[in-house]
Every structure is written in C-alpha cells, then in structure tokens.
Image 1 (spheres, rainbow, N blue to C red):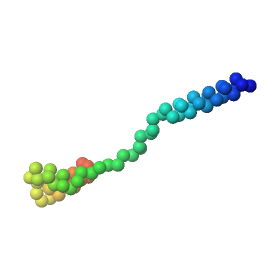
Image 2: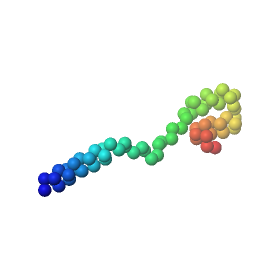
Image 3: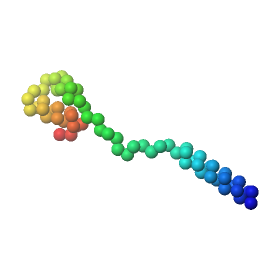
Length: 67
C-alpha cells in the first residue's frame, strides 16, 4: 500500500512539473499599428505629392498599404 501511495504521489508531482514547463500560449491576434498621419505626411512631402495623389498616398499609408 505504501508503494502505491508513493507511486501516485510521484506521478502527480511529475505531471504538475510537466504542465508548469509548457510555455505560455502566444496571443492569437496581435493589434495592428497604423502609421501616424505625421509620418505619412512627411513621406508624401519627400515624394513631392500634392492634391488627390497625396490624399490617396496618405490614405494608403495610414491603412497599412490597403487602398
């Protein structure tokens, strides 16, 4: 009976250590960071964009490449 108790206790301890050794799960969805308007405007200035072309560029820049 002592052997059975010792065996059960060692299994519980080993099982708990195995569960504790698993790394935490990574987040399933990471938040998307959009580029700030100031950064997009500086890029548009560097490209010397004006008017509707500039507006389209800034919109695409802010949307992370989506138009």
